[in-house]
Amino acid sequence: MTSSKKKRGKQRKARKERHGSVGGYIESLGNLPAGAVIKAIADREEVPTEAAFDFFTGIGYNRQAGTEISEGHKVIYDRLIDAGLVSTLVGIANEGFIQDYQGTNHMIFLSNIAHDNDASRLEIASRIGPAISFMLDDIEPNKWWYESLTGFLNLVLNLASSGENKEEVLHILLEYEGLFKFMVQSMFFGTHRPDVVKGSKKSYPNSSPDKVDHFFQISCAASNFVHLVCEQQDEQSDDRKKNLHGIATVP
Image 1 (cartoon, rainbow, N blue to C red):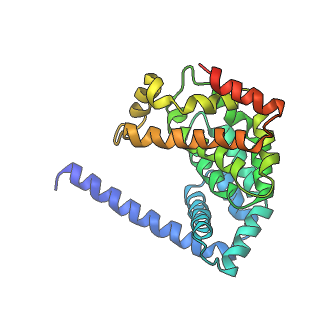
Image 2 (tube, rainbow, N blue to C red):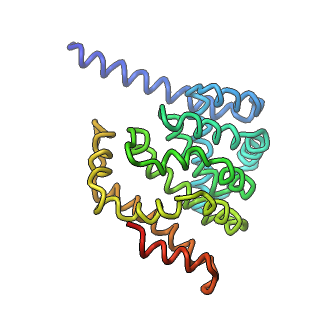
């Protein structure tokens, strides 16, 4: 057997073992203290983080599909949220955003939670400022900027479009200087920012994203947010007029 085949065999075995570990951790979530789970996530332990991510993603899929969520899963969900999961995830996203996959991964994690919990949306919107500042600084973006772009745009959209408190959340988001302008510009990254297109491809060396699909997703998330902003504001309000003027004049 060649060394490359041995390497692939070891990788398959490691993935299988990891999958089993994550699955086992998910099954044990109901028996573990919520604080211990959150501490493991805060300590960047991969299996607990991935297990919690998969668990919350599954909850989100079920809710979107209108599928009944078991009482046991509801209890686990509430215990983790009440014990401070969102605060931990926001902290990791803000601190790790510039330097590793954790910030990128936790953007997606937070985006899933943003669908389900009004209080969590307010907390995320209020505390996500450092990550927003990082994303708005696109002069010399690093690979994490490119890999985080879609998740970031979807997070902003999910925060502003879900729940009974979406107007309050939207107001908080629009207080971040430059965010609305960035969302408008993002609609045209695929057609007017060749540097972003080039950088995105370099950030996925093994499987470069298809230009049309990748930037279509980016444009959709950004344009839906911009539409939401204009739709929720009174037609005669100064804020609406300001935002419409911004759309027309953003370079």
